[in-house]
Length: 423
Image 1 (tube, rainbow, N blue to C red):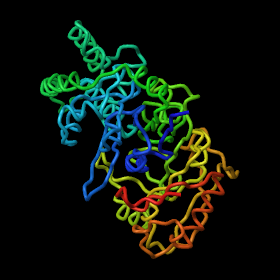
Image 2: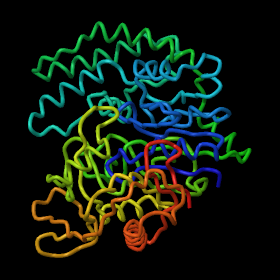
Image 3: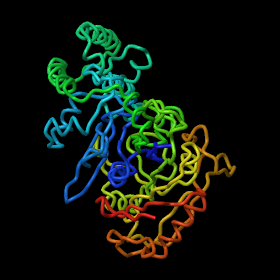
């Protein structure tokens, strides 16, 4: 079983990029299996911060191959921008980074449709990142999409024009003006397609099966988080892909029998970006504290994240849904300085107590039941050994492990790859 899966257990932003970066040396291949440039994976090392949107988080390690899988949607404009930030020559890039020929493309009209659709919803908008993700996945499931492999076909121009014409027919249904300069964006899109054509485009299924046959180790990297899954998240305030461990099989073309460990990542508290239900959200000085100390600004959107206490009901749901074997807790250092903090361990819905995640988290009569914990004042960002963590932290950790019935294997106490405690 040479494949491990790493994914988020909340509404994204759990610190997946950093953890993939920390674990990369254990693997031969890092493979992104879903999402698109709506993801923002932050990595920090040697005093520099790097933000990736489409490229897997193992790209900074030599001798490790990185694959953008078939389940990912790619915007060539964003892709090229990321490549430039890597500051690598073409030969080095093409030896480290590979792109599935079955990954779908995000077109300029996808972004235009995304923006028009969100504007039309008015107060009912879901908080889209406006990156064209949803419309691209809609074309994929509607069997109209364009894939990376289509770039090498002789009838590419006709295929492209046909889908663009279809998009403009749809846009005529939206009586909304936008400031989107389509001609400018399309010209840029065509320019960046040439960069994508020169990349290492592969048959990703054969690429991975060959690696598996050689018993090479693969880490499947997810984007967003479990509670944003299109089927099992807080619908309709979700993303457009399968963010769970099952999504790794679909997004990479691997068998469930190939999966060994499932690494699930959770913050020591909870955040979410955009609209949608959030039972443990707080609005007092504690929220300001978490926002500031946790630097809770979206890496992709630049939006402030909503902050709240850890929700163990939702976390247990995510752990069970994904079959998590190894729990990773991030941003424990952010809680340093609080006298007291809280955690949700059950819900009250219409007067009845439950520890089960409900069908609809939007229910008005849902209330989180909170347990209070003693805080600590010590700065833990430099601690390297678990035993040196403050006693209140250990108490909190034990409560989480006992509730979820799985151990915490890795604790992140800061953004740098060196600020990581391994079990």
